[in-house]
Length: 91
Image (cartoon, rainbow, N blue to C red; front, side, top):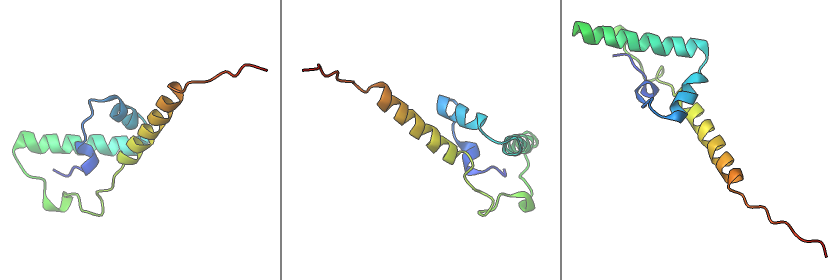
């Protein structure tokens, strides 16, 4: 259908929604175009022409790096939010 690997990741979670909001305008447009093209093929019960298939070279991860960045930030935030501070009394 001409989709990329990251197009097939589940969108129904907070981190994915956040990652998709960080896409550049061009990446967001290209993603929407790939979904519309795949939907059109599905409705017409036709396969995408072979010259329009996604090649291995074109199938780059464009959401996964954003998801990893968001996960690191969430992990760091959780570590700092649960940190306990000990107050030492002056002698």
